[in-house]
Image (cartoon, rainbow, N blue to C red):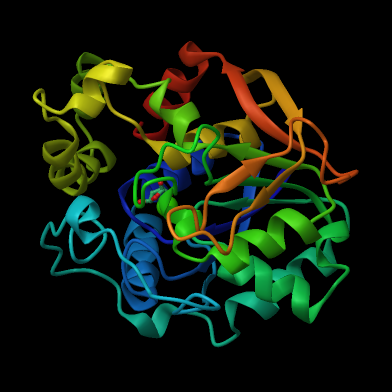
Length: 315
Ligand code: BDR
Ligand code: CA
């Protein structure tokens, strides 16, 4: 089986990504590590436990609650204050279910136990990953590969003028990861996800499956669907209408080798000092930075495959 470690700031699309991976037969998730981002790290842990309760028991580890430097953001306007659409859940598991071991040491331990075998999928700010490489500089080389949802390719931000949420929420961490992780790194950018929206009709069909998982998804998804479905929004018109499950694209690339049909290989880094551009991913297409290590940016994908991975997630 393909061994996965998943680092999340469990909002709605992180939940969708986790459920997608759990439905793929030859994939084994060894642990879920939690980081600040869409909501507080405590809420992220609770959200992951709620998702896993519906699916299968996997150890959950608590990680960083703040970025390395700068302000702590959240995305409550989109994912709800609790990060999962503020849908009431009186039976939510308690934080006593979270492992005693911290996220960063768990990541290092698990990768060390399975050298060269673990694929890390990161769908939140990269704070835990940055701390992991500082604690163990050999951590990246123990990984099979790293799949990131984050960054932007055309300086079109979703959080600041030029910045995507995960990178802008911890620019220093994103910088450390893009410069110190010399393993294969696959990046799903914000612009890529915008160009691959799923039609709302698919969404209706997806959520109409008659079972507990689909009902759960419908409840937690309502808040962000209302937020995203704004016909008057100019942004929607630029890319066409539809829903963007950002983190699920990164997960699909990690769990299904036939999902991505073309990558762009380019050296990347992160701007740290700009007033408008702090946290923006920078593509060195002219190779002026002399970076030998290039990242793989998702370019073309099989959307039918993506739809069937999502459908299976709620079966
Ligand atoms: C990213 O930000 C978060 O709100 C989503 O979960 C996704 O990881 C998109 O910019
Ligand atoms: Ca996320």
